[in-house]
Length: 138
Image (cartoon, rainbow, N blue to C red; front, side, top):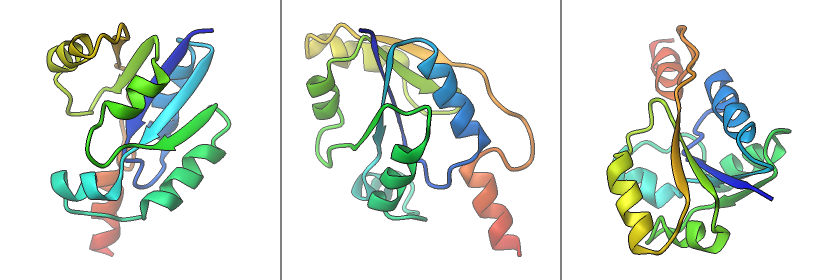
């Protein structure tokens, strides 16, 4: 059974998230989603919209998701090492250096291939950032 891992913040679930997860799910038999921890989001974005347990609950409820877990606060690779996926899916706009990720996987003797999901919905409100900016204008 082929496993794929998708990761993200999933601040506000929107159609772009659904497209990303649907496309990732097509590549494997099981889709496991790792939801970013609040602590890690604060380090990068400093903007928690919805707490991690609520975001996890929403992601778990998505039909396309087979399993969802919270990431690790210290080491983003810990859950990946436990899951040992065949593939790791990155979204088109996720800020991950694919070469760095491949090297880190190799160091940990993980054989997961990294795939970039390039399908993307264009439009005014198809990203959490754009939705948040729109709400702030109101």
